[in-house]
Image (cartoon, rainbow, N blue to C red; front, side, top):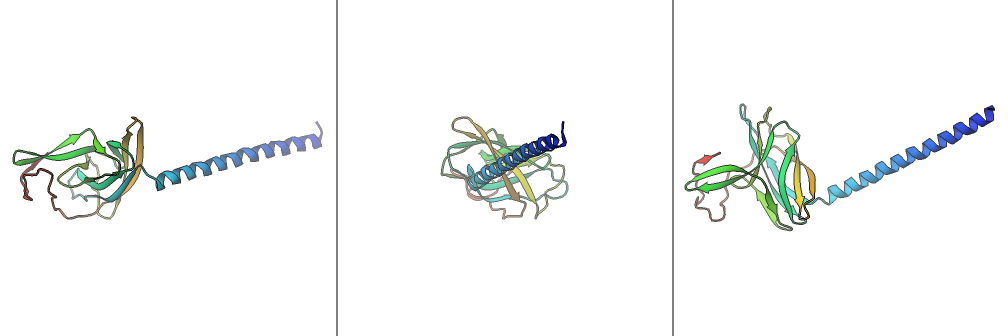
Length: 184
């Protein structure tokens, strides 16, 4: 094989590699564009999100926010980047005692704001190994199911901050704004 043929083969090989690299770059750019659209058009609009900070020795805390779905969805759970156990919870009156318990799902009707708040439906971050400090952020992944049964996720960053402890009145609530005993 002559030097000229070797050079032509090398040039052809390099040209082919350049096309492969260009295709990979274009593919990566396309993926970023798709991801950008997903971020700009989330399935759920999240407002006023916050997680309550923890004190030393505490292993659980709550997450609160307003969720407005763009289509009928069901919140079937959430994951957290922080080691621990994530649970969906709700508070209900049991006679004169408010009790908290885990629930499997929360309905998110299209266009309606569902408030996750203290004393009602909320996210519970349990069995945390490190306390969450005010001023930090928690990365959560909402796990959603569409009306067609497709499972989708949406990542959100939630600030850890102190908020007022006001207990909002619940529908049909016999509490009248008073804090009766709360049991988990």
